[in-house]
Amino acid sequence: MDVEENIWMRHLEMSASKPMLDKIDDELGAWCMMKKATTFETYLESLEISKRLALEKIRKTVHTAAPGAEECICYGIPSFRLNGKMLVAIGATAKHCAFYPMSGGTVEAFAEKLSGFDTSKGTIRFQPEKPLPATLVRQIVKARMAENAGNGT
Image (cartoon, rainbow, N blue to C red; front, top):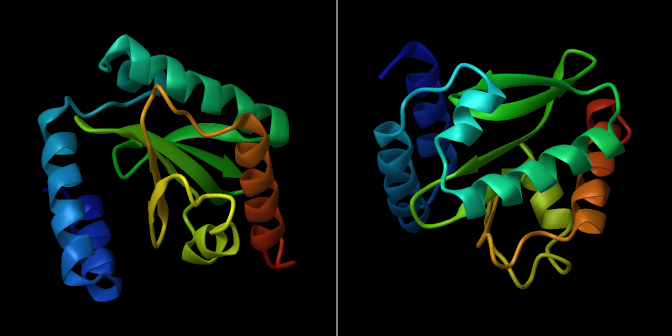
């Protein structure tokens, strides 16, 4: 495990319950099995087509909601940065796709709209066959932009 992964795991361990850690262990195990990506393209190319298409849709929606967002790889997953601050990230495991608002407060603020999806403090999990609606992704991205600007969610 590299330094970034160690930091990420320590952060999760400090803020996660036992059931949440078990779920994270499952996800991390699947993630570690994948070749470590250095670009969005290499990450997405490693996925089965249904997951790739679902994440490409979110990618396009993020760029629509935040036109200046830069793509990067952070903690081994495709992420978006705006004005030097992390905005959101996307990923996939063997069992599902995920959208990471990188903010527990944002997930909590959208709890009602996310009721049909599996969520935890900073993660929204979904199946490629039942993707997150583009409207909801845009709303979450806009909320994260406001939060990063200091205007809350």
